[in-house]
Each structure stands twice: as structure tokens, then as C-alpha cells.
Amino acid sequence: MAQQKVLSELRILSSANFDSTSILTVILCGDDRLIQRLQHEELKPLESRIRFRFSMEALSKEHLISFVGHCLEAAGNTALTQIFMEIRYP
Image 1 (cartoon, helix red, strand yellow):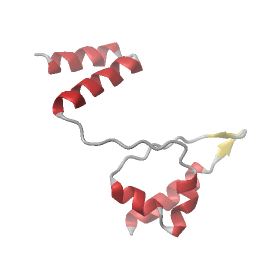
Image 2 (cartoon, rainbow, N blue to C red):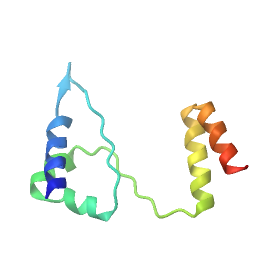
Image 3 (cartoon, helix red, strand yellow):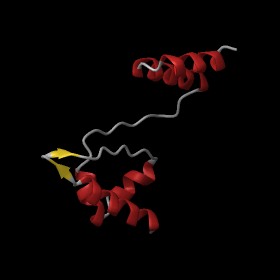
């Protein structure tokens, strides 16, 4: 139940605003157990604040490498992209 308490505290933190702007952005990642946990009555307020939901199936090694490379490139981190490419293609 410790995780439940953390999620409840996260709900409180995520409701804080400064000049009508949310001061905290949270990204939750997990498997089906997270989705089930958010269905609990005390976490309904947190679940209702989720703006985007995205579900992915497991990727093959090749697809995962391609995906990470794309994300690094899209984020504009050329140094990290170069390091990643060196590891990817030694």
C-alpha cells in the first residue's frame, strides 16, 4: 500500500498551481498494474488529471534502438545522439 500513498501524495502535488499555471508536470510509466491502481477510488482525482494516455507493446531490440535514436534526435541532443550512435554501430 506504500505505492498507493505515494500516488495519493502525487495527486495533491499535481493540483498545485502558480498564477493559474500548473507548476508540476508528471509522467507516469508502468504496466497494466498502474492502470488498475489508478482505478482505486482514492486515486480517481489523479486518474482524472491524466491528459494523455499512450500504450506500447514490447519492441524488438532493433525497433527499440531505432526508437531511442529517433527520440534523442528529435530532442535535439546532438552529443547524446552521437554517443548513442557510436554504441549502436561500433
